[in-house]
Length: 481
Ligand code: BES
Ligand code: MN
Ligand code: ZN
Image (cartoon, rainbow, N blue to C red; front, top):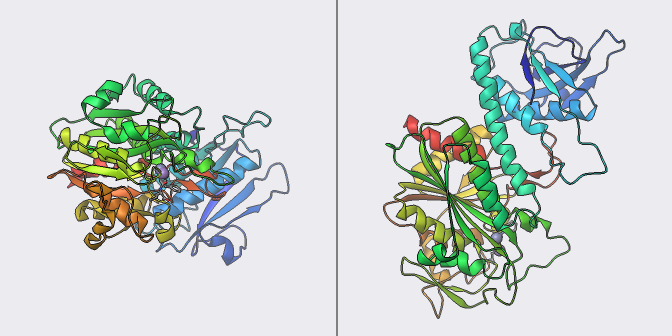
């Protein structure tokens, strides 16, 4: 990751981010100034620079996300052309203030987007060379209000946030035969080894002692035993404990209710919530944030086998509830039940629980925005952080009237709703049953936002890294209340 703060400019490319109202060195079509648009102006001699223009749209409406995406789009386009560096140009003379966005925030968003734009998952491509790194130069004279000290901070913060997000992406993109439950455990132990994060793993008898029966039953068909991973970071132990709870199904084959389909590769991304929690913990610890947080990751592989849980089996939980697993493909809520009971047992004041829980959330909201249920204050803050970060969330209702759909003839609850409607809501209602008072709770269903289904322009297709910055920012924002 190369970002340099220097006046000397030997780069072959100049990048001009353009607002709608901004002056430019060449005549240019209005269309190229729109957010998400870009155009090259090629140099006609070796002394000249190639110019890359990226639109930012209306200055008044421009969000940090528009800047981040413009940074990503520029990085990817410049990288694609094989350039090894480029210089960001801000036309100070013509530049009015960047609306409400302060210079430091503007640059941090740009760099964050730049680094995320350059991300690619190249581990398994052996026939082609991975693309080259591209160094970004920023000229101090363009940013007279930013001191050398401030820019160091801006670069460092952007790098930490991008690194955490890319960690989440790497985990989500990984193959399930590599990143199986055992590897996930190893990975966490290894990753947080020399950091202040204390890693505790519960497996086998430890799960049985704690009656984490959701995990035990869901993981029963796999050769890789399930585990509960606890990541404890006490940046300030005097603060109330916040828990981040992630679903970590390393492959969701559906269990005995086996999934079918031509290409079910996406079932490896069913640990997107777990990866978001890991990425958030990475960001928090890299920042040495003054927070008190525990990450809880329920990890299992949901596959059929002679030992796998049979549909209709009863799973009992230590809060006294029994659940009939009518469909073994509704496994996420079972492992999340264990996790939320554990969060309350640890004394967490709040739980932010995040999961690729239902296909239905995509039906309701599409793939650009996740659903959020639960505590109103927490929801409000998460929605506003998400809006700022480009990790969007939409508040969804906990419809008490639908709870009867979770009725079972044999147990206290069924793990699926009786109707075919509102599956994302009934899933949230199910999980609510495992939230112990007085712990506050929100549930985020990120099944739709876990991946870009195609090349997003500003980012490679594949894992989005959704949730890493969102959860980290939520935890640090508690200190500003
Ligand atoms: N992990 C899936 C949800 C999912 C589906 C995530 C598609 C991403 C893309 C979850 O475990 C699941 O299988 N849910 C079922 C629930 C049903 C059996 C009640 C679903 O959504 O169909
Ligand atoms: Mn499933
Ligand atoms: Zn699943």
